[in-house]
Image (cartoon, rainbow, N blue to C red; front, side):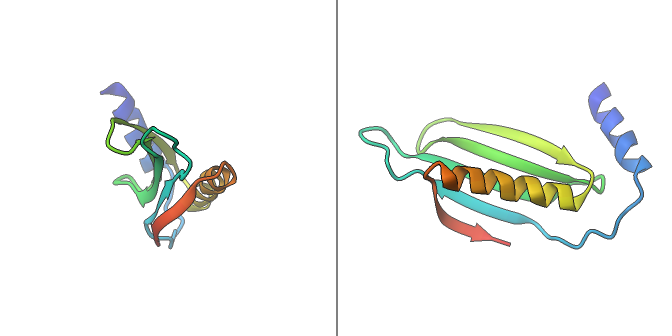
Length: 102
């Protein structure tokens, strides 16, 4: 509870920058799974309620439990850079884009 209040105070102290990017999503899947279910990664970049941005990374095997990680950013440019860097790193590892949305 204390942490969320601290984040709220931090976001309120930063003046709005007029960020114009919208939510971005990409779904990636690794095709070479062998006998196991294929791995997937879903990246979502979306504005949060306090004027910042959050990058959500959901990963795991298809049909199994997944792991969800969240990163918070104050600036849209930093958030977009992190989204693109994460996407490009996974493409380099052999993942393929199945769907995307801007």
